[in-house]
Length: 71
Image (cartoon, rainbow, N blue to C red; front, side, top):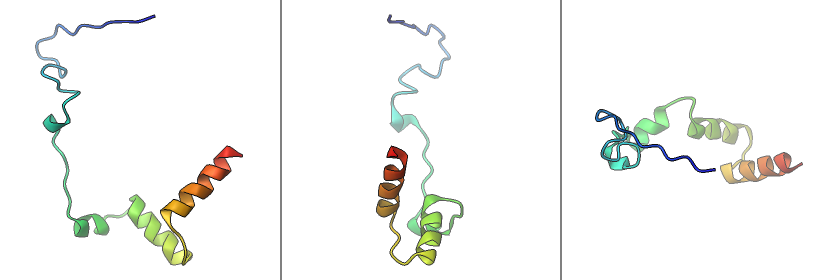
């Protein structure tokens, strides 16, 4: 079954590709220094793991996680 939806609202967010054209989306930009100072992000978590385990890498963690998920 296929549904087609036509948005007739002239004030809709979809007008002019509002949901498809990513160049219309305001983006948040940070320098690497600003990003490194943020807390509770993956990079900060990885830094904490590296402090606990000398040979920690995100790639190694992802592989281990994938193996655990596979059973």
